[in-house]
Image (cartoon, rainbow, N blue to C red; front, side, top):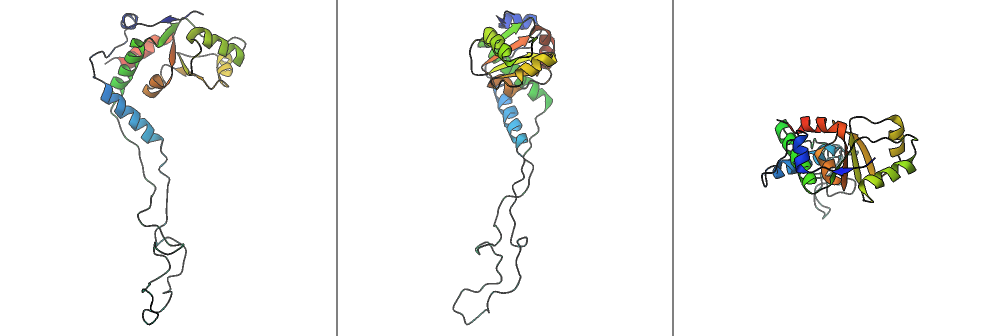
Length: 205
């Protein structure tokens, strides 16, 4: 299998909608990436207030005559084992981004990677023997020895998936599932020609 660089003209011929108008789409990429990171947060951090900690409500000592500051209980935040003041509570960090913004961000990210010469196309991608060694050799032959390689296709055989399963530097993903963050994260992107139509559909209006 031989790979060739996908340039802007070839991308336009494949009906991929490119975003070449200066800074248009940069803010969309920022909004989408921030939302994706926020949506991964579990928001499960939880602390107990003075009303939730385990402890007696009994006054620790009498109000007057001890020379000490008056205390109403052992659960306030300034006591050891007391509740936490203004501590975190479970919350939802998720952010919503509308469809047009997501589409614009995806198109802009893909355009930038194509313009930089980091997107390659290949007629087919399959590892018949299902071995990781064969997978690594094939990927290095297509994209060279780089830190991270993203391989985008319509579908992959079980043998190919098994071969890629133990390779941390490369990721197999379908054209329907690839996202903006992945387009920006990987050093090289190898696209199987059968997936170009799906990518074009995802960048269209």
